[in-house]
Image (cartoon, rainbow over all chains, first blue to last red; front, top):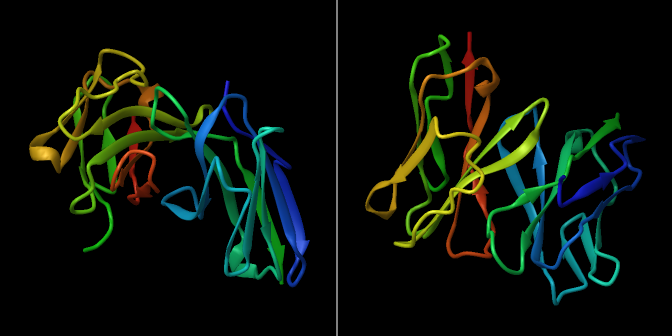
Length: 112
Length: 113
């Protein structure tokens, strides 16, 4: 099964509202990364948060990590129509495989 | 270019034929990864190269799949005797070191008829 599971699977909001997506995982991680994907092609890296970090910001993006709950959230503030995309969390394990294990993604629709 | 590049962008082949997909990572990146994305399976890991170490092949779905990385740079993913279930977008990524941010290429969309 997927290491990361995302919630909700789909989210529809109005432009200007905030969007929150959650990700849960099962095993100890080295880091967690969030990606955006438009039209089923290239993945754009958003933020990497390491296991010893609790919160990171990048522009309108805020990511939190709670290793005790094995969960992360991505907050997009003041959303825009251009934020419409699929968002994936992906984890890199602390030991063993160093490739990303992806969640199933959240499909965000921002209505203008 | 500064990013990861992949070729071809699209490939249509007949069942039973072999295909080769190419990835040019970001210059200087020691780690290179192959993933694929299909409707039924989501995004899944295939193979990982790190420097001169033996590759991690644990994600390859069958022995029809193989990959090599020449000179620590360009990588080729080969699928032999393609099957319809191999149809997917094949994504390559690279990172400076292990545990770093992975940067993805635009992908190759493979369609097996």
